[in-house]
Length: 280
Image 1 (cartoon, rainbow, N blue to C red):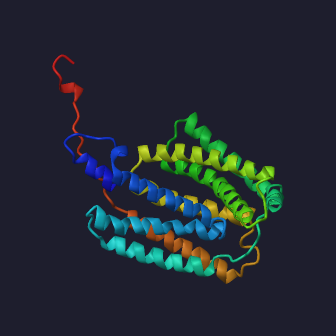
Image 2: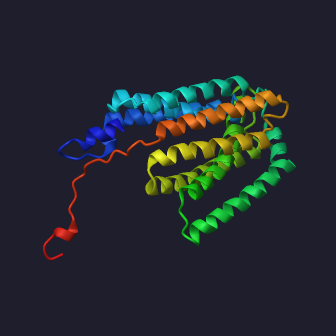
Image 3: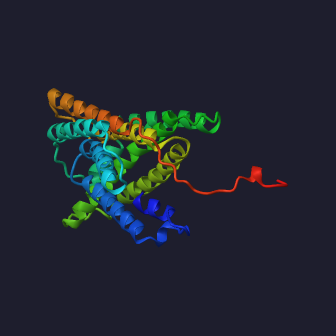
């Protein structure tokens, strides 16, 4: 964002890829995603997914220093709620150490709870896709629900791939099993279609609406998929489950408070209005 604002202020517009600052930002973003991917190999989905609220808090506070935004009371309140929720998430997240071998992933894939969940997800996705394609319903909830349904498959595949790579680096080779490559294909395909629908939502709606709703939907779908596929809360105490869900609720609320009533910044880009050209 900082690089784009700098380029927009120049007298001669230049593409973003000529900016060293832009490349620095892209590199940092890539490193962050690598870290996020790696985390799925070491921690439960139910813990990794909700911690995405940290990026929203970080964006709100870093923008004050880099983009000269004003710090609002809502940012402080939202950050406090999200930090409290994050503390509860880390404290009460399921701690079920399991070695995700390729054979175990295969067994999870053919288990009846996951098959029922997959069938229901496909039915709901097809209904939403019908309204999106045939009825031209492009409501933000419809678009982000499709993103969330795809995201649940993405996090399942990401955790499986990250875990199998981690085990392989420790000497327990898992890359020879076909399920590893099936998961890679599932991960890439679901990511590509997620990007399509998320991009559509960003085109039609303000980012201040898309970011919190997408975070809430994505986190919920990721937790559900982790519970059903990897059985992450199988032996958890009722109090731990309740406190974990309360932490999720606080994180959601914090993200909504931070994003609420933020105005989108419109760059003043000169253009020619064809309606005012003589003879047109």
